[in-house]
Length: 67
Image 1 (cartoon, rainbow, N blue to C red):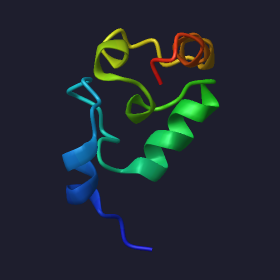
Image 2 (image 1 turned 30 degrees about the vertical axis):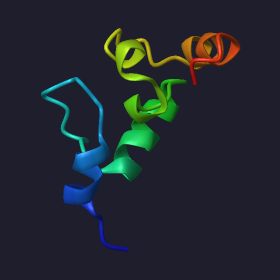
Image 3 (image 1 turned 180 degrees about the vertical axis):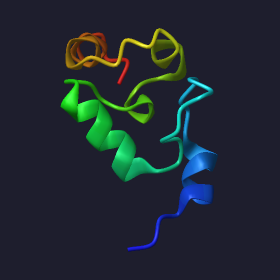
């Protein structure tokens, strides 16, 4: 399967500039799941900028109906 990195970058809201996985969604998801996290694209921009990508943070946002 060919990676659509350029197209993925257009939608990527990750604010961590030096991230080597930006636009390479399969690597990003794998990386974050290993740490019990979700990638930036699962969060609204203001929540993503906190860098708290934990499952627990996501669940709080769901409860607040922000996701």
